[in-house]
Length: 223
View 1 (cartoon, one colour):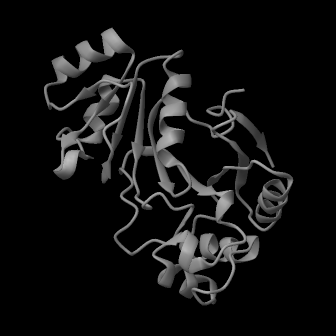
View 2 (cartoon, rainbow, N blue to C red):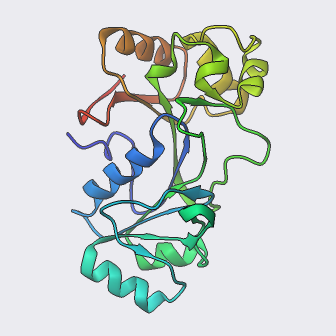
C-alpha cells in the first residue's frame, strides 16, 4: 500500500514536521512518487546525509536537472558541519520548478517520537502546499521527559509535568495548542494492538485527518 495518497501528497512542495520518523517518511514518499515524476528531497533545517540517494551540493540548476533526469529522485542540499546537510542554496520556489515533487524535512526532533516547538520552529517553506505532522506511537505510555524533544515546553503546552506519562489526551492538547490539530497528521510506529488503540484515541480527539501505520511494515490506514 502507498502512503502518499492517504497524506494527499501532490505536485509541488510538501513539508514534514514533528518527530517519530520524518526522515523515513520522506524517503518512503520519494520512493513512491518517483513512479509518478521527478522528486527532490531536501531540508529547511538539517538532515543526515542519506544512503542510497544521490546528493547534489550545488545551486547549478542545470546540474540538478541532469541528476534528476538520470536518477529520478535526488537530495539537494548544502554542506553542513559534522557531515550533516543543510538547507539548499536555491530557494524552494526554484526547486519546485525543477522537480515534480519537493519533499522538505522542516523540523528536527533528535530522533524522539514527540516534539513541542519553539516560536521559531518549524521552518516550513512559504510555498508548501501540504504540511504533514508526524509523531511516533512509541511515545505513548512513557514520561514526557523521556520521549519528547523540548520536554519542558511539551509539558507546559498540555498542562503536565515532565514526569507525567504521555497519553493521547496530552498529545492532542499539544497539537491543539500549536494549531496543528486540524492539519494532516501521521502516527508512525503503530506496531501493536495497544499502539493502534492509542492512535485511534488520539484521532478521536482531533478534527483533522489522521493516518496511522508503520513505515517499517509499509502498512497504513486512515482512522
